[in-house]
Image (tube, rainbow, N blue to C red; front, side, top):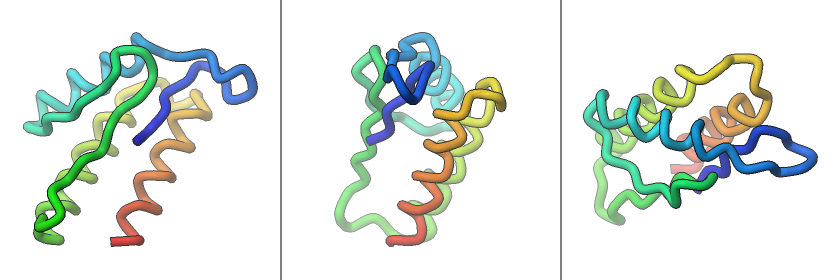
Length: 88
């Protein structure tokens, strides 16, 4: 999953950021699960086709980028999603 925080050092949770990302993802046709505090869960089915996975990750990245681009934790999360894409 992705942990959305306000500050990397203190790990202060960003509940509002998580909710915004979930809303933006839903607008893009992507249903994601979160804990409404700081965590977004990634749970693609084991049998997902590569093209479908790539499209979902692209929509998730676009949703994350709607947040303030100065927020380093979100930049790190975008990098994490890119790394996840490379692993599959």
